[in-house]
Image 1 (cartoon, rainbow, N blue to C red):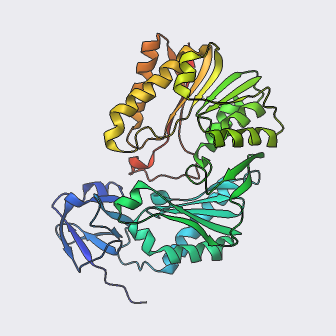
Image 2: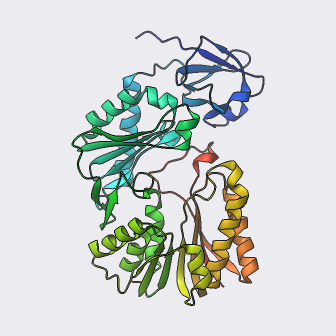
Image 3: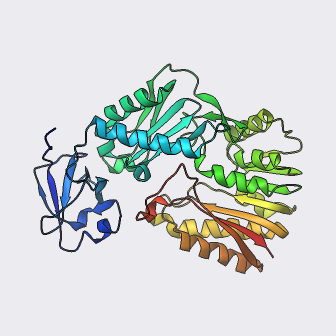
Length: 396
C-alpha cells in the first residue's frame, strides 16, 4: 500500500518539547506554517522547525488545541484498518480488567486509547458514543462500522453534546445510530449490583463509570456506618455502602428524577428506602442545617469549573462543601472528597480540602488518593486526562 501524503504543520523552533515529552496536543501559538491547505478535522503531519516529522494527527485551525496526536509513526496510513486495530486493542484491554460480574464499562477513553475526542461506554450490550472533536467527526463512519463489526452491539446511541463540539465548529448530535429506537433505560450490572441507567436523559452517558473502583473501596469501609452520600445522583455509592453493611445511608441530590432513579436502584438491590432514605435537597443548604453527624461522608459534586474563568468560584464552592461536611463528620469518620473539574488540578484540590479542614479546626489523615478506574486509561504525558481527583481522609 502506498503511503498517503498528508498536509503539514511546521512548528516554531523549540515548540516540539511538550510533544516529545508525550503530550498529545499542539496549541495554535506553536505553529509557524501550514502546508497543503488542510481543512477543519483533516489529518496532518506535524514537523519541527528543521522539517523532522513528529506525528500524525487531527488539525483544527478554529481551536486553541490545533493538533491532536493520532500516531507518532509518521509513515502510517490513517484508514479504516487503523481504527479497527485501535478498537481491537481497547477491547482486549477491557477483557483483562472487567470481570463477568460487570457489564457496564468505558470501552474508549479518548486520548488514553488513541481516539482523540471519542468516548464509547458499554451498557449491557448497548454502546453510547460521544464525539467531541472535528477530526473524530470526520472518522465517524469508520468508527461506527468498526464498533458494529467487532462488538456486535444490540444498539448504538450517540450523545455528542458538549462545549468542546461548539469550540470545534460542530453542532450537537443526539439519537440512535444502530438498532431499534427503544426505551433509553437499561438495567446494568456492576460488581454484581444492579442499576438502572437512562443513557439518553441521564448525565454524561448515563452513569459515572469512572467511579467503579472508588465505589468498591468506600463500600468495603461501610460496615455499621452512618453514611451521607452528597450529590448522590442515582445512588450508586449508596448501594455499595448498603451492600457493605452500612446501618443507614442518606442519599442527597437536588434532582427529582435522579432521586426517583436512586430509589429504584436501592430497591433493585433489595435495600429499603426507609432504612436508606433518598432526600431531594440542595447539598449546601442541607449541610448548613442538618443536626446529624455521620461516620462516612461522600462528596462527589458535578464539575464546578467547566471553564477556566470558573476556577475562583469553583474553589469557593469546593471549600464550602468540604468545610460543612467536616463539621458533620464524627471523630474517626471518613471523608471521600472528589472533584471532576478539569481546571481544578490535583494540587489545587488538595489545598482546598486542607484549607477547609483548617477552617473547621480538624486534623485529617490521608488514607488514599482516588482516581478513575483502569477502564479510563490516561497518557502519562497528558495531565489534563486526569480529570477525576479524589481524597479518602480520616478525621483525627
